[in-house]
Image (cartoon, rainbow, N blue to C red; front, side, top):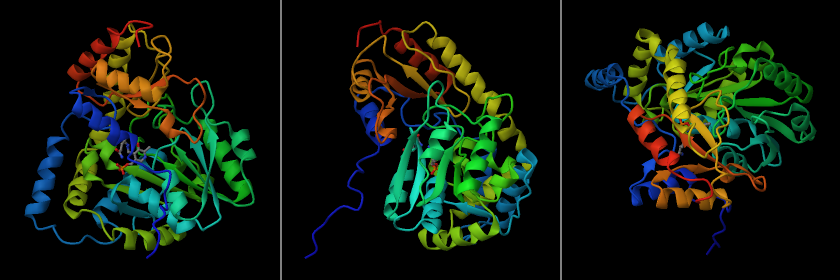
Length: 388
Ligand code: PMP
Ligand code: GLN
């Protein structure tokens, strides 16, 4: 019999699942795993029900229903000024996770290298490793978890094929500034790299220049696969519907993997989301203000706490620095916080190949009802310096 050796020896249960289970076990408030605790827009639920009753319950087209691809293309052009061909450049996927996996497997071969920026979202490296390739980790730098483009360029080797970027950033809440697009474009062009741009928080960007999609930059758009997720935009992380926008030649390769990974995505939701994008653009247009208010409410409520509060330029995550409270490492601190203080958070170290020594940061999700945010902040404010 074959001996079983894991293809993913480093992978265990994700930190999001671990912390959600601990939150449940200890009856804690769950500000760990990133998901909203408020309802999806009622129009979306109505549209989903109508789609199912109208009989949209069989396989959807492999690339996504035309109405949704067209709505995505129209939104993208309106927001980022980049014309997108709905037929050849947009593919609807079963969440951003599927899109990222399919993208890596469409383009990356055994022995290739892919640059990722730490702390990085957990699904990138397993996809790279299953392709037989290697993730080359380059840290984002302080202050503010910014890409250091010179340092990134120094990590490029003759085997490097791709770089994966994420803006707005999970877990750090940082976001690209306009100059970052030029720097990334120059680097990708000099070394012939493809770019996966994980933009699932594209509608949750707070900076004065708005979300810096790579699609704003024509040179970058020509070599990028941009991944987004309706889970974040419409408060429905459990629906797992997302999309990938890429030039026609890259999309054609992407679709070869998508076709045999899932073939197609939940059909009724595609009809409902197409209707929402067309008829309620105010929903995604007002999302930055909606989440800015939550961010500010949460930060104001935590101002009196012993936690340090790095700035948040996008996403629905607030990092907090607990060095005034405890010298435990972040895993131990999160355990203490959920068991003794009734609040679940996410430690930062699992997002790194090599966590920086002495870093005392954890992630809190503020995609929560105001009452939940106030109650969680009250618990966090009650934690005295040095008590952990
Ligand atoms: N990328 C990032 C940065 C994310 O935060 C998430 C989900 N939290 C995903 C990808 C995956 O999105 P989906 O749930 O649509 O697969
Ligand atoms: N992306 C979510 C987060 O960052 C978690 C998704 C998951 O549990 N896989 O919290």
